[in-house]
Length: 148
Image 1 (spheres, rainbow, N blue to C red):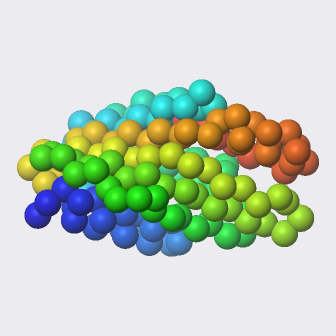
Image 2: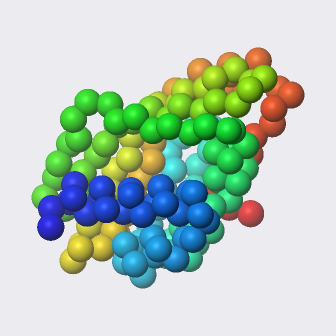
């Protein structure tokens, strides 16, 4: 199976876990020593292993995504495909009544070995816009951390 198909399978399982909080469903996609990095001036993290990755993602969702009533992901352009992975640019749209709508932009890079995710890097590209949104919506605090 090619890297894009593997990533899309992972992404579908991830979105189901976002809804039902069953993170066991995404663990089989990861190599035991997989690394997940977040690259941003706002927050940075490096998580190793499926347990740490799932716990970090869950913490991020609880502190950020789940504070909104609606979350919608939108791919931007065509994915870049590599022999061992792919990069997909995206926008994430968040809404909650009484809070200004928020759109974050970034990309996800994934690399596979033997059909398993060995590296995942999320890069956020609009930190200044987010900081401005945060200042305008200070009464709606969010937690950007991936680790405790």
